[in-house]
Image 1: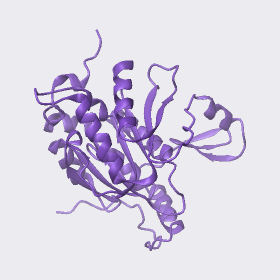
Image 2: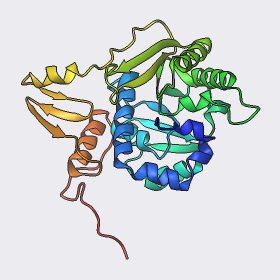
Image 3: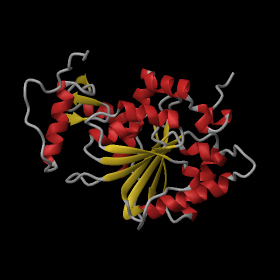
Length: 285
């Protein structure tokens, strides 16, 4: 029996209630997958490496994708329709969070001034716009209004990378048609197309000119990296020769030091390293 898709269960603001939002945020498998897809979306944005960018995180949920944006030294505004999800995102935000969260329905448009953002990402969200949850909702109109206002709030020459789970080919065609109608160029980048579990679909949209779509991942890249003796930084792991090490966990001393070095490279003022860096504090009474 096929698993029922969440968007078939009704409006997202009702589906992601307090219980579901809490389950979502505490499920290590979900967090790992969402983090990986957010990192890949940021990579596909092809942002300048010499300065931080200001990004829009659409359907930000509990802040998992915001953590990925902050970890790369960029800043963001996250919007979501679920207040339960946003409460968790705000509660979990700490001094390493480089963003703010806003309650907003993307189907009503993206409420920002023209040219505000240097790019936008969205993880597992835009497929919700393909479903009408009331008699006055028209998926085609909602998608077009979303893409039209998204195009307006992005700077020229920037990108939006939207990961989603298409239900079928017709749904993908509908989404792409409305994006193109709003003025975007681009198309789909499908990572691991021959894998049932690893396959991920990213809609890569460009706001100006004609640029070649990024190459999709096939799995062969890691094999090639492991055959070399050069240190390579992968999307999810640090690869050194034939030895694979886990990425430093958030909040660890290694994670704090890596972020500090990134910020120094960007020319930002940061605190000096000390023996207390990354050390957990004792609970307060």
